[in-house]
Length: 108
Image (cartoon, rainbow, N blue to C red; front, side, top):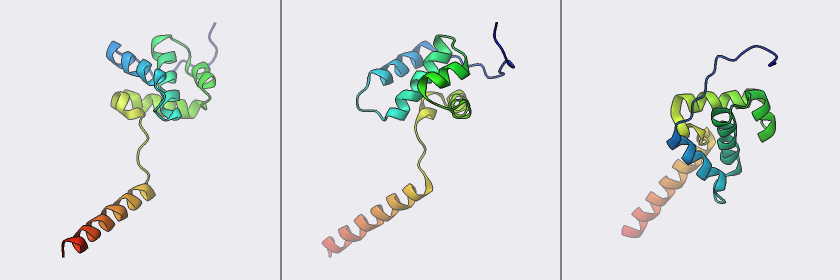
């Protein structure tokens, strides 16, 4: 008999999403964290494992598991990707500006 409060979070994985997530599991080039999130979703959405058990199996805390499940619910498989951090955006913009300046210098 399950213990604890039932969760209001209901995760449904469509067959197309399931195929994508299973592809992530077989990939050797994707980041490990993305593969871990895909495994979490497959355990919960397809196999029916509880969130707490699935989080423990993939090595995530319960709060992090909920974070990724809510993001998947809102954005689908695309929501499992890491979002850029502010310092990464700053560095990327600086690199783009540097390239533009170099191109401008080469053209003159």
